Image (tube, rainbow, N blue to C red):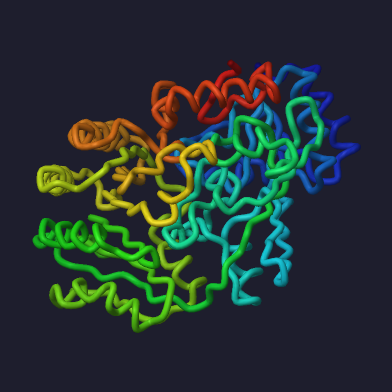
Length: 455
C-alpha cells in the first residue's frame, strides 16, 4: 500500500522519536539515499527510515505494520533484483548500523545488519582473523548471509550462513529475539539460507577463522582459448583440495578486449598452494594478471572495481553438478553473442566444506552442487535494456539443460517468477520455511524479498 497524506503527516511524528533519520521525498539527499546497486531499479519510497539503533528498527517495523505500508529492508543495497527499495512504500535502511566488534579470544565478530564485508574485513584483519563469505567487499553482510553466502573461504569453512553462531532479529510484531542453536532454534535454522523473510536482522555473530595471507589473484587469457581454459578449470576443480577455491569468467577488460579468466584463493601454506594450482601454472602464459601471496583483505577487494554501483543489471543463475564439454561449448557460444562489454559469464566452484554440512542443518539447500553458472548482463543506458535482457534469458535457456534445475536464492533476478524461489529449496524445506514464516510473520509483512509466503 502506498502512503496516504495522513500517513505522510505521521512520518514527521515518527521522526520525533527516531535516533536516526526519517528521509522523505524532496529531502536534499533523498535521491542518493534511495539509489541501490542495480541502476535498473529506480524506485521512489514514501519514506526511508535510516535506523541507528534496535529501538529505531522496532519503531519502524511497528509503524509500517500499523499503517499498512509495503515494507522493504535495506542492508548493503547490493541485491541483484533491487529488493531493498519499494515504490510508494517504507524502507528500513540499516546503513546507520555498521559497527563491527571482534572478540579475538572467542574468535567471534558481532556486526550490525547494515555492514558490508569491507567493515568486517577491516575489523577482523587486525587480529589475523577473517569471516567466510563474500568475494566483493561492497556486498552487504545481511543479504548475502541470509541467502547462503558464498565466498573465497567457503570451501575451507563453509558458507557465511554456516558460520553464524547467533543473530538478533526484530520480528513482524516488533519483538527483539535472539536466534541461535539454543534460542529460537527454528528461526535460527530459517535465517541460514531462507533469505530476508523472517524479520530484520540487526546483529549477526560470525565464527571467525585464522586467515591473514592467502595465495590468490587472477590470471587472464585470450578468449580464443576459452574452451581450453574452461576445460582446465573443470579438471583442476574436480580434484581441488578444500583449501582452494577457483572461479572462472568470460568477460571484457577495461579497454574492451574479450578474455577468459581464472580467479583463485588458496587458504593454506604457500608451498601446498603452488602444488594445488600447478596445472594452472603450467597451462601457458597468461596475457595479464598474477597469482601470489596476498593479504586476504586485498583479495576480498580485488573484484570491487568490476562490480560498481549504478550499472543496469539483469542477473540469472543455474546450479550444475558438472561441466561437460557440451556445457562449456554452450557458454562459449553464448559469450560470442554478448550485447555489452560490461556483461560476463561466471562459474563459481562449490563443494568442500559447503558439501560436508548436513543438508538438513540449515535452510540453504544446494549442498551437492559443484558449480554455479552466473549470467551477469550489464549495460549503461536504460534504452539498451531489451537486447541485454534478451541475451541473458537466451543464455539461461541454453544452459538450463545442463543444470540441476535449482537456483541460488541470492541470484534470482528482477522479474523472475515465484517458482524460482521454490527452485531454491526442496519441497520439504520450502514447506518447513513456510511454517516458520507463519509463526514469525503470519501477515507476510516482510514480502519485498525472494518471498516465502506463510504456510
